[in-house]
Length: 261
Image 1: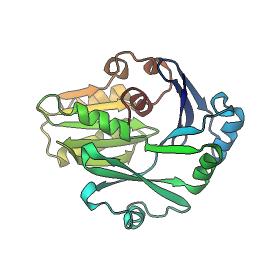
Image 2 (image 1 turned 60 degrees about the vertical axis):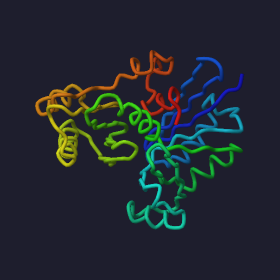
Image 3 (image 1 turned 90 degrees about the vertical axis):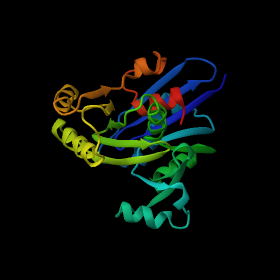
Image 4 (image 1 turned 135 degrees about the vertical axis):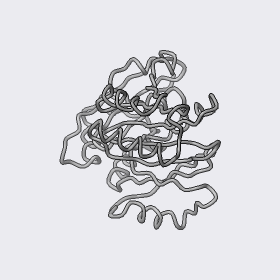
């Protein structure tokens, strides 16, 4: 049986996950990131101390938490994506741009990786496949959006960021991210988006997931304004898949393991 390795590179976290084809064997190994040191330097250090990286396979899947520019597929052009990305996220230096096509949503996700981090990966692997961290969550929630007849707004929380998105059939209706540190920030931004989309407080649905700051406070305050607020439970959603029993695995990585990209 072959082992498949995934490296998740967050904004301030780093972790490895190994799956064995044809079985439920999963090994998750987080790395203690040193603050003040680049993620490339942390990954170099991880190759010297992490069990899963001591004898890595030639191929790896890298899940990258990076700022993402969404482009309608009919407007995407590789020749102009750098200018568009730099306009949306100014001040980026020494980065390389990549993109994932999302055929189900008629969109292209453009994202960046530091050149140093890319060099470290190239030094250790023959084949590197990149996927944005939020992509498997988008795909899974898009599939769920077809259940029922009411509009649904989604929010995914990770590393003090909130990714808010909604769909209209096979396209994004809304997609943006917010830095959130406090429950009040969460409630403010979600209600702002809710009102911007003119959703109905009595009938439409809000689904939240991930590492929600002050979860109970957020739920209590949201339910003062919205009738249908739900927390996505991966243990139930993924039928008690073994990855959901491993402490610390982010929801996006759980989704990628269970549902694919």
